[in-house]
Length: 155
Image (tube, rainbow, N blue to C red):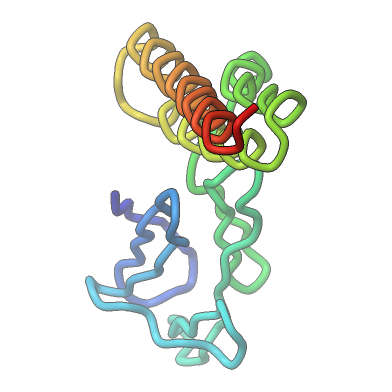
């Protein structure tokens, strides 16, 4: 989902494409991809003074919503989650304790999805319900994989 970002001193309309589960954030100027900067993950933006400024995204884990850094400006792309939203979103991480690498991967994926759900423009009860479905789904997928492996290995 693209969102318009107010960046002081930069020419053009700046938009950010929010990160997906398997993709990073993307920066656009007037609807076109921003020019690449000198280093990987950097972009060049034209300032109102005619000089180029380097922009990049900072952060990304555990919160998938990074901060856009342009020169000395740090622009938060979304409000941070509250402590209780973090606890609810992080429940799938319990799979790390009981599920090994597969459980850890599923737990981390479910947590990332949950943090994205909490940023949706849906009613609060719906966000908690969707998050609960994601968490239960991750547990059920882990149980299915564990059962299949046990059958396959003959235990």
